[in-house]
Image 1 (cartoon, rainbow, N blue to C red):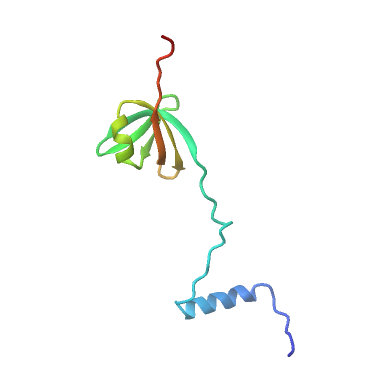
Image 2: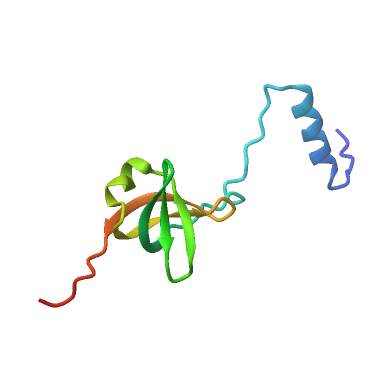
Length: 107
């Protein structure tokens, strides 16, 4: 058998031709290419905005939509610590945990 050297782009073109010709073939994405968003910590007051809840950060005058009304509704009007991932394009926090912050210091 004789090997014929091919330019580097040929395997990609062949893969594209194979996947477009056969819809049953799927290309598995590279897991390293998909960066998982890291959890962040946010502080603010939970406010109701229509049927949604937002986290209002008075310091930065920013409001973030909170994605889990069921988790956050009982904290309306409360200063809280939220751990979650931020979808910056939509100003949306995907809530992992939420807890009230006790502002009373001393006795």
